[in-house]
Length: 173
Image (tube, rainbow, N blue to C red; front, side, top):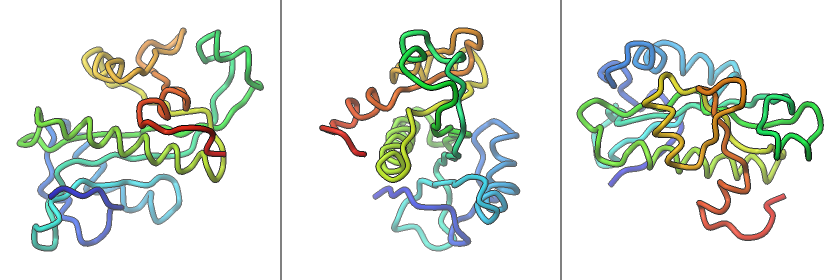
């Protein structure tokens, strides 16, 4: 049985490999430091029956961000103030031996659920992500992310789309 939980000392970060050295290195060396400093939060996917330290099957990192209205798609920007709060999906990775099993989707849905939780307490207009390449951009677009007008590898998923995808009803805030 899989479970997503906050990164802690109970997780084996050293053996994680997703095929992208910067993503591997971030999990091993930086994610814990960023959490302790309040910069971001990393959540890991583990097999809950695995012995401790549990191998990380995948992870995602979220942080707060501020978006500028003029950078957003026009139909959204015209209804918002100049600067608006949002969340950013800083990283999302799946272990190489687990890729192609739908775990990336599982992690993305969990990240979207966190966006709704944060919105309920503090607001925010949605979720941003910087795709590392065209393949990643296409993957995020399958879930409703829209490229920003001037930055095609920067994508945005509005809160309304997130709530619709999760089956949420009504306003959370």
